[in-house]
Length: 178
Image 1 (cartoon, rainbow, N blue to C red):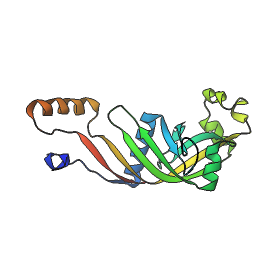
Image 2: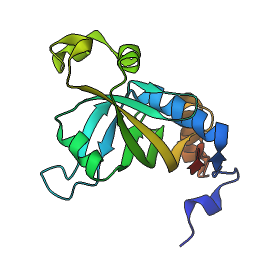
Image 3: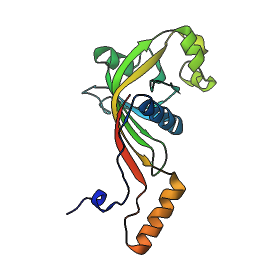
Image 4: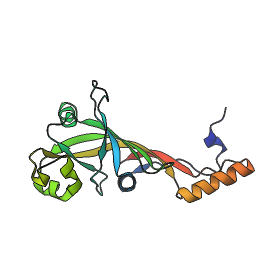
């Protein structure tokens, strides 16, 4: 049986490196706003997987989070800094998985930059709460799946392709090497 990609008239793979990969990470993180943040914890109900809000994705493709110093996540990172991040930007597009290294910081200026008043839900003493830490994730590699021309074009191509019995997929995917 042939892969759907063999029936494609268009290129469906594009690997990204350096600045292009960092921009893809930054754009997808901004669209998603949150992710599944996974540590290498072998025990527990979630085995180290939890939802997290992404506070910032910088120009280098690094992701920044706020976390409590006494959380399971921080202890797991201290034991093994290798993490995996899963993002989904839209219902049918904007998927990204990243492998990287997490580091924990206590820089007050950085906390102030990333602070959002909603965070007071978890840090009751505000941005000066002594439990606040910043987690920086530096991606080493990743893989993305997306649409080349946005949701409207992708949907239109799928409808036309179904009507004429031809693969008109608008997807693009590839490896990321920031």
